[in-house]
Image: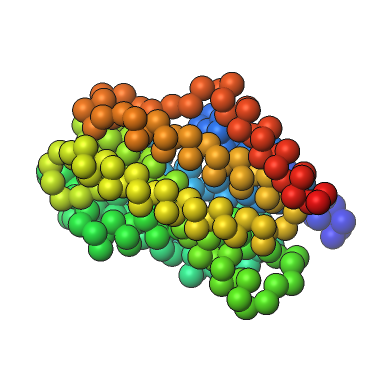
Length: 301
């Protein structure tokens, strides 16, 4: 009897993981490419994390609104998603496939409320803490920006780091350096996406993540570019501390976002408000290949 139950749970988990993979395939070719460079012991776990984050993000970025839910119903949907995630992490099961897949990873990598709660707090911020539908744009000052970035991006980097390091032995100094690097990389990715998504965030979602002024100026763009480059440099410095089978993927992602930063530096704010900066697929493939080659040479010196 127990064997049959175990087999059923294994099959269900594999189905949940397939669903998580479909989320990545549908929403991010770049992230999907980086995941392929991860070692097999990490790959599915990182996909499971991304799938949960992506579904939650879509929930607060318009899917529920387009489905006709009222503002309160959107808040209730997010609360239900949060409660079910905590329940699944505790029990090891959810009937929601994406949450179930994440729960397996959270339990394996010891991802707990210290990382899960800040993420969902940022998702709540996107909906707004109001009793009725938000009126006017949602603007973030420096403190609010930092808090939001920590929850929406830094903790996601730290979740992935727990996956990478779950079987590793490392001293306190190395662990602290890796945590700092993972947080900085997550922050860099988020700040780049804020600049890339200026048009959608301001016109469709009514959000200004990068300051309190109504319209960014080119001097603001350059200030953010400098901030992002410092964050990327800090992240790059700790890649050699990662397990061998995680380095190429992280290098590939970092290289892609460095290329995006280069393009943002060459693009005026007015152009950013009109269209989203992208890197061609051929360039992405080249960056990934160079990341693999660089890691191989590092390991065979």
